[in-house]
Image 1 (cartoon, helix red, strand yellow):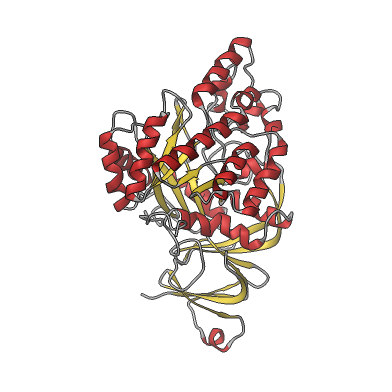
Image 2: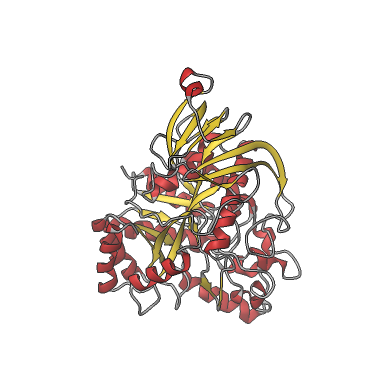
Length: 467
């Protein structure tokens, strides 16, 4: 049976424009937009009316970097696909792209099947997968072609974590060469893990065991060096490159230099690098463990370069790298040895609000907010215009956003399955009011009305940001 929803009276904000328009939703898709008060808009009838007067009407967020139920350091990320996608919805995100993991000695297909099993029937919002390649060989290189054809069109490689996820330059080059042929996009965790391990070993030998040494051993120059090396390998292969979780101004400079040469090189940063700093890692009584992630939080002076990169489009995307571990029982595994602290922060619920605060603070414009959080991640990973915009034919993934509501971020009120907030006590202006996922309300006037299994797996095209 056909269902129609009319969102009336709001300011529709997309990456392309801002317009006072009413939005008609039919059968899970955007049917039409018309100027508020126009004859066309007045003629529309609907089963459900949403009054967005004084509010923004924005596309649902696309978080292109999450790790639900991710294995790390002998434990698992504390959000599974049910709790994690519910929290994402509360934060105005309607699509996640999570990372399936190939285990060493196993096929890409086995890894992908395992992640489908984790997510199937659990998700409150739509989801897709990237593929982490841990074992680059002739067999897995051939498998890449088939995965691209069926909608898993991006592959993550690690220059960090020797003995776990690490790939050497030869394997990285082979994967890049293959992606140049099959249209896949290589995503790179760019840190010199071999050198970092030396610094970790030396720090522990000196008795430097506290969380702050996590940041000090993962030196900014080792991020910059790996970023430079990844760019050169991509140039040799003739392949595009997407560098994940860029945190250091020296790494931004490497990306900017490559883009100034016209190279298809892209960068992502995350809210933690924009709003938090190495000062958090140095908090006493092991509290700094809450902020251990890789790449690590940097000294505060790096933030200006990240904001500038977002304004100049040397950084194109803000994702969360959401990989939560509870402080009690998980982060505590690293008491007395920072290298054993599980790496990752919670954030899937906070991204849209923090970036709206950046609009309020004057770092970015409203349209740029939507561009870096919705439209570009959708284009980068082959989901546009189904996701990432409000236009006829697009999925009705729509957020009614109150730009004047004031909220305080806290573990007491968030919906992520983790016992702390990385932004505890921070006051932000702006809050999600109502969220539609393919036309269905999953958040309705600040009440969760979604359900596990509403979200569907969404195959992706190849990168649309290159054309």
